[in-house]
Length: 177
Ligand SMILES: [Zn+2]
Image (cartoon, rainbow, N blue to C red; front, side, top):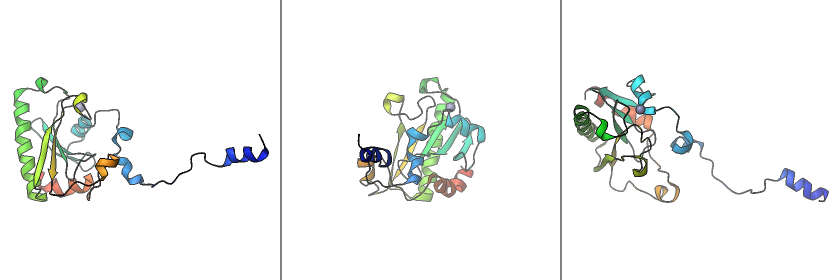
């Protein structure tokens, strides 16, 4: 190997290419940032706070702003008990979840006036649950024309508001829930 080749190997990055640095997007890359403890149980311990993004906790059910939102003000309705199987929830808790879902939709409508909602449950990892060990229902507000090319090509959603801003806007509504 000549002296010059050796210099090239040592000093030039072998796969140099253009890239776009967006460190603020890291928080949405869930696979890289998923912590080991159950985040929903942590939110339960901390109770309602901006830090935990827990908006509401009552009668065994809580509402949390999703840290990895599919859309602005994406909420999760979560039983307090750490269960992955809906059949393990007692009937009282299950019914309370349904009541809270309806109240949360009312609160979202009040603050954000969405045109519609996607609501539902991914039961089990194979069904797409991000945290399959602790069951949670999604409420995703939808507005006409709210999709763009980002989720299609980059599995990334570009949103006008951070989860923390959504929390602050919704906080008052959930205090009176
Ligand atoms: Zn849990």
